[in-house]
Length: 300
Image 1 (cartoon, rainbow, N blue to C red):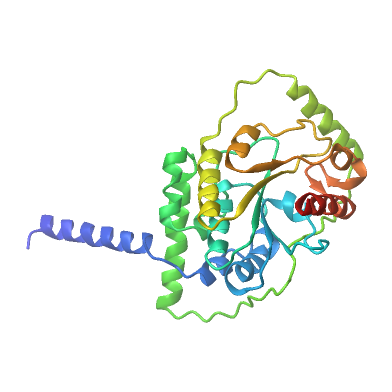
Image 2: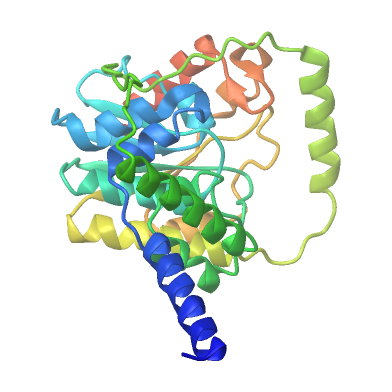
């Protein structure tokens, strides 16, 4: 056999090995355990609520740490509420969590957190939780992180295969039986920083901006809408602004309204500095007021 043929066989074997790793399908427990270092271990809570807990929730909330710190799901009355917020922004991860939750649950309403402006990138946890097929959607949404996400997905799959082949003992505890998803923000607010940041955002708002579009947000929010329509679930978008509520309404309110009902909060909560732990997150007192207000809106 010539060296040339041997070379092609070797390259082919490497390609097959690469693809075998790339398209491996790690089980959910491995993926969520592998992500425990993120969001202060929130992955434990998310795994149990997505796959283990069968308790029925009437309303389920998805979004970032704003909703984690802002909605206390233990304060509600008639409605059984579940807060499934997760640190940082990324509409692809919101859609993934919604899809996974709806595989075995049937809430009456789903609430998606929205902000003054939308990010247009994937969530940092994307390659460590989501399958290759979903990561590939980023080519359509023009996400600049798609190649790094695919690379990190390959490394994640390689770790999974290595653990399986060498039967690596798993001593990591993976239990979080918390009933509620609200996380209190213990940050000691700096009033001067909050006031200065609000003034900065107010000045920026005076700058004339072109019409805002966001291919990433439109794509994943429409997918969430389809999932809700399939299971006859009402889709709501909850606006959670920063301190001062400078924008009053989110930039993409038109898009939200096309996919569901957009709920706008009162200034009395978000313009009161005593309700904030930092510029983007409510403290315990603010979360209580916001949660009681939201409960009234849902019951009406």
